[in-house]
Image (tube, rainbow, N blue to C red; front, side, top):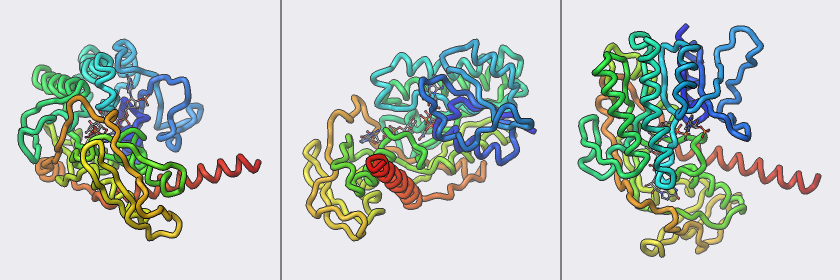
Length: 365
Ligand code: NDP
Ligand code: GDR
């Protein structure tokens, strides 16, 4: 039985990857940091009582800013594969917490690599580093591939740039099996609520059910190459199953504007939205609603721009070239954007329906 260690196990990707590796028969150790409230919702269904025998999913308290803790966990678990997914992953927030982001996302990667080296596990333990399309930043060329130059545009991306190169350096200097997956945006019903796709699908559900009036967004013109997290964790695993360690771009090759995502998401509940105005004056209005359950008044404003969500420096256009991962890894995404949007809206409508019911029951009770 292979042993994997996943940092950031309770994040979006940590949850899907844990599921995948458990299905493949792995013993999975996850690192999660202590929080004042329980925040393991995404992995609760995988939880196994540690008092039982043959437990294959185990959690450890840890933090990317704590070297000795990481060394101890890696020593105890002796992993065949480490998936370093833990990070302060919100680009906008990284402008507010640049030093912490550098520590957790940049130096954190070094801590993992160095722990493996200190413990003499260089020949045993393979390492996956969660690199990102944010490295490309200011557009140099499109579509972006493994050979496109980087130009990071946020403290997050600069920290991840360090993570990228230190991974390459440890591979070259010490012969470690250490790889970067340069993953483009990937989303799912498990996506954090403050990333734009999930913010939109939650708002569509809440507005449709009459629980919210307006969705405030930042840059509606940004273009992203959006895939499904379930497909992307499959690629992470494939990257560590190759003969030689290499870096790979994982993307769909299709890019879409934020405003188009808004329209697609509202269309899922039968509501047509059109945008008028420019810049911060721009607003999204309801043109028609064709679904009896989600009757929104034609002409009502459901989307507005709030400059508070603009970033000091923005990444305007991302579109990935997945040729290498398709040919070398045999990786092929199963989801397209339409399927992704449908799944996300459906799940959020379900959640909000349940929560509105709960509120009503609470009032009655
Ligand atoms: P999430 O934000 O959903 O998950 C991040 C995880 O990291 C959470 O479990 C979080 O814990 C944990 N974490 C944050 N800081 C620390 C720390 N100091 N010590 C230990 N754990 C910490 O991100 P995703 O699952 O979406 O992404 C996974 C990785 O992939 C991240 O590194 C991200 O930067 C990168 N990435 C993501 C892409 C995407 O589109 N999703 C694309 C490319 C790269 P907590 O719950 O306590 O905050
Ligand atoms: P991103 O994702 O920055 O690409 O990073 P996010 O969903 O936050 O933003 C995508 C684009 O949408 C624009 N936008 C808004 N974004 C947010 N969060 N909130 C808004 O209200 C809003 N309005 C417009 C943004 O300006 C941006 O252009 C994600 C993270 O998962 C990173 O960790 C990962 O590395 C990259 O994807 C690839």
